[in-house]
Image (cartoon, rainbow, N blue to C red):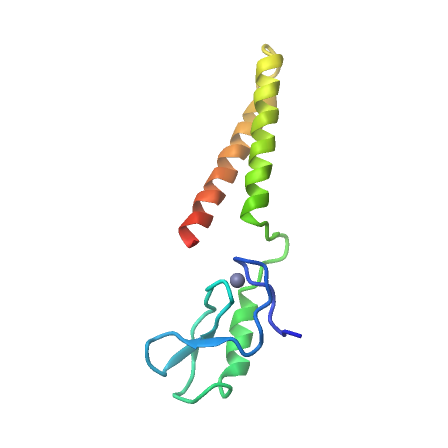
Length: 124
Ligand SMILES: [Zn+2]
């Protein structure tokens, strides 16, 4: 069982022995996830794995998802966007003259989701 917290990009827990050298040499290394996400650099002191394993695992776990946040798969976020978009369009089409807050809040949330999806695509 992995001691590593879930990857903030894919949600998987990388195996404890998954690592890479990050500077093209032997000075820095990091935990690496199967999705390609690389943890923060850890000084290797030019030693082989697992001499710097404890430090690398600790660095990876420091970048876990902060409390109060949730990791949401991009596909799920896209579905939420589609559903919210459909709902706000339905409200807008059928309730003209209603309080604009009904669809303005939804439009603001849609814009927020679109920004998150754009950021997620930059990582891919
Ligand atoms: Zn990952």
